[in-house]
Amino acid sequence: MVDLLKFNAKICYTAAGVLFYQDKILLIKHKKLGFWLPPGGHIEPDELAHEAAEREFLEETGIRVKTMKTGFVIDDKLTQFFPAPINANLHWISKENYEFRISGKARSEKTKKDWSKGCEQHYNLLFLVEPVDGVKFKQNIEETEGIAFFGLDELDEIEIPEHIKKEIKFAFNYAKN
Image (tube, rainbow, N blue to C red; front, side, top):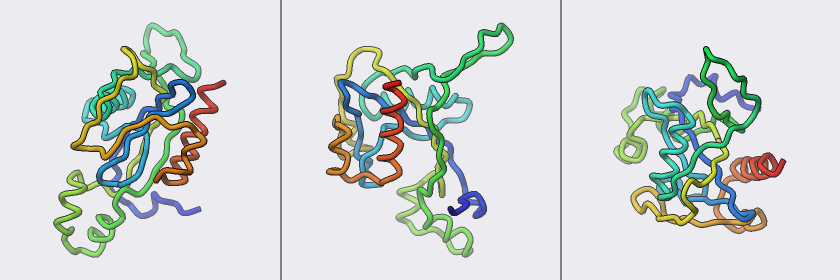
């Protein structure tokens, strides 16, 4: 297994939401990446991860969601507890940015435009979410090329990286239990 942290890549923190409805998952086709994945995006300064997942979900789908409480929550008057992610991962988002940076060369105009935050890797927190006001969605055409519900049996028919398929299947099993 490759240790992604040894490269000292610039890491951006992201959060995403997984919404299951009638045994299907809502996915967006990301415009820059060209494949399907759960709605999500960057965690803003002074924003909590679960809030970022809810905000990004709304921005990309038009569906207002709330993160579901998972794991063990302690009732304590001195500490505030929040929904826990069901998964966290680190993955390359632009190895090209990293390679330009370590070579001392300037980034290309394309990578400056596509990855304006300069991210080389994303540390993503994945949350289960539930709809607040229904599941009628509206595609954000600035960020996505598509939006749809898919059954688990349909994941092999769409453009989706294997690690995201595994995350979705894990989330589905987690949500069922």
